[in-house]
Amino acid sequence: MASDLFSSPLAEHGAPCPQCQVAMSGDQRYCLSCGARRGQPRLDPVEAARSPLASQPEVVLASAAALSADAQAASQRSTWEGFPLADLDFGTPRLVGAAVLCLLVVGVALGVVAGPKATTTRAAAGQPAQAPLAPGAEGEEPGLGGDPPEASVDPPIDGDPEGLVSAPETSEPPSGGGGGGGSTTPTVTSAAPIKHAWIITLSGPSYEEVYGQAAAARAPRVTAKAAASAYLGTELRAKGTLLSNYSAISAAGLPNSLALISGQAPNTATAANCPKFINLKQTKVDAKTGLVTGEGCLYPPKTKTVADQMTGAGLVWKGYFEAIGNDPGSGVTSCRHPEVGAEDGFAAPRPGDGYMTWRNPFVYFRSITESPDCGGSVVGLDRLAPDLATLEDTPAFSLIAPDACHDGSAASCGDGAVGGIGAADEWLKQVVPSIIESKAYADGGMIVITSDHAASKPTEDHAKVGALVLSPYVAAGSTISTHYNHYSLLKTVEIAFGVEPIGKAASASVKPFSKAVFANAPVAGSD
Image (tube, rainbow, N blue to C red):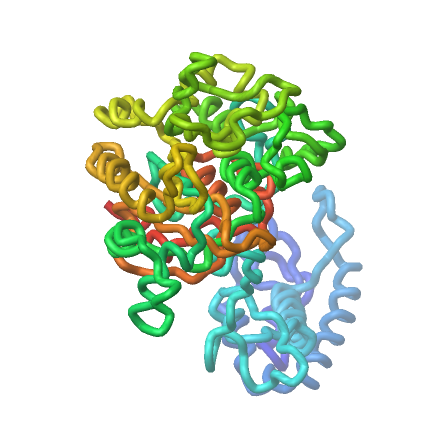
């Protein structure tokens, strides 16, 4: 069969090489000793494979069998004397070439039949193949036709509809004095680059009492309930963003003020405005949030407040309280509070002295009262104007509270006069413009005016008190109806200054002020 495929023998078997006289096989074309060729050049094996005979599988297989037998016989006739493989004879070159060619043809045929199949055309293009289609999805290949597949998005965390929360992670405890403030909370980005925050707390007015004039304008029949607040409810309201669904967290004043600076929840004593200045009988401290469970008024030294956080972050804080230095008997002009264990003699206003202890939340934390910071940071309202004079002297965080004559309450202010919302308006006219005109306000400032409780709703813990936000970052005259409370305000401040939310503010269900509140804030990454 070999002669049929290629050619007839070139010489008799054993005939000598024409050049070196070494015996050669009859169909051996090249001498293995000297390399000389005998006869004319033969047809290339590839061309031979294209011959009609090679295209017939039965001929190729029969030839391979014959060549194999021929090779075995030829192996007995080896004349490679002195060569290590002298006993081996692979046959003539034609036989070897034909055998290799047959093996290649059979290998390719088997590879085509048994080889792996590409699942998509991406494999042919050198791209990763798509996963198999899901049952019932036949006929549509993901990523190649139709609408693109939707990305997998985690549902928003409760209390974060705008997606401000990036992802839950364990954060380091916040810096500053005290302890127990660390928590495992989502990382949140501030909605505005706030550098200075002033919180002004009135005492007693409800949302309707302050902002009722707008409702009265729409419905004249409710004019009996219309507010007398021409300044806060009308003039300032037109310059800021109103949080119309902002509520208190207690029916009493003190728990709301405590919540604003610490996130602590009310207890029986604080809900009564702490008539006796006693230490809190601690029962439990949450190691993550610093939330203290117990009864009493004075929180232990390790209880953290936003003041401690500001100090730890190298930022200045202050509390400005009108009439704090008006007690002639004590001579104290800052950080005024009763003796520990004593009845609170400053729980109600006195003639010429409208300062009330429960309106000043800082003095209920021993981390502050037992620190030199109290005397220099919990001061009278007369210190506000000098601090606003320069950007360097303006605190990063300020809590401001008027005395009983100007806090908006309808009760007597100690001098026989009734303050009410009209007196609060006049007081705000002296305070708010001085802040707005300061360099600090222009440099990332935010003013929030709210109330520590709604006196007209003495049994409603979560009464609506409203909050007006003034800032270069808010849209003038807008209204946001999202539900917020004092914990939300604390969280907003803490996030803005890069410290960890504490107490109830650490809960993922408590929302900081959203991007909608700061509609004019620069977009992150923009010039």
